[in-house]
Length: 330
Image 1 (cartoon, helix red, strand yellow):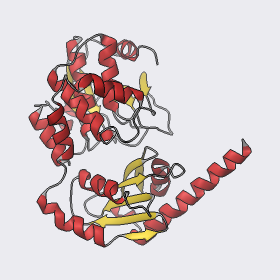
Image 2 (cartoon, rainbow, N blue to C red; image 1 turned 90 degrees about the horizontal axis):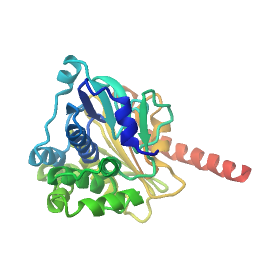
Image 3 (cartoon, rainbow, N blue to C red; image 1 turned 180 degrees about the horizontal axis):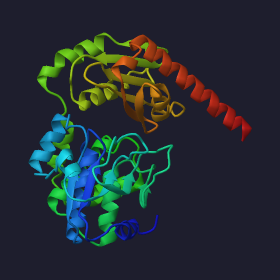
Image 4 (cartoon, rainbow, N blue to C red; image 1 turned 135 degrees about the vertical axis):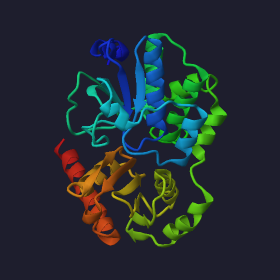
C-alpha cells in the first residue's frame, strides 16, 4: 500500500474524535501501536483517545502503561460517550480478536491474517511484518515526524514482544524500525517491561504445569489451573517449545468465564494459527500466525486435555495432507 497514512487521513473526519482501539486483552505490541498512532494523530491535529476491550492481564504491560504514563479511556466510557470514529490496531473484528468496537469502525491496521474480508473504509494488513508497532513506525516516517522518547519506547517494547527480541517472524520493516527507535527511546525500560513477565506466586503453578503435561508424538499440551496473566501461558509455551522432541505446544488456562490458550509451532508445515482456528471452530475463537497463536474456549465446550490434544494432532495431520495434495497438484 502506497502512503497508507495519507489514505487513513482521507477516511477520517477531522471534526470527529478518533478512538484507537486495541485487540481485546491487549499486549505490549497492541498498546505500543495504539499509543504511537494516537500520539501521531494528536500531532496532526486530531482529537484522539485509546481504549480496549477485556482487561489488562499482563503484569509487565501494566508496568509499561504505568511507567510510560499511557492515558486510557475505559471501554464503557468510550461506548457511552460522544460520537467517535474508531481505528483498530493489532487485531480486527474479522479476525475474531475484537468482540465489539466502541465507535464507528473506520480503519483496521494489523499484521494478523484473517479469512473474512474487512468491512471498513481503510485497511492496512501486513501479514509479513512481525509486529503492528513496526507498521505504525512507518506511519511516522511517512508523516516526516520524529517520535518523542516515550513513543519510541512504547514502539520498541511492542516490536520486541511480538518478535521475541528480533528472533521470531522478523521482517525488514521490524529491523528498520527497531534500529531507528533503539537510541530514540529508553531501550533498557522497553526490555525490562517485556521481560518482567512472571511473579513468585506463579512458580508453584508453573512447576505443576511442567510436570503434568501430555504428549502425542511431536505435540505437547499442558493445563494451567487458576486465573493467571496471559504472559504465563506465553512464557510456558515458548519454554516448552525448546524441547527437542516437540514441534507444537499448547498451554491452556482452565478457569474463568473463558478458557484461554496459547500455542507455538516450530514446524514449517504445522501452521499454529490455522490449526488452532480449526480446532476451536464451534468451541470458541482462535488463530493468529503460523508460528504462534492464541484463542478462547467456552468452558462448556472444553473437551478435556486428552481430547483437545488429539483434536490438535488430527487437525495438523489434515492440514499437512491438504498442503501435500496442493503441492502435488501444482
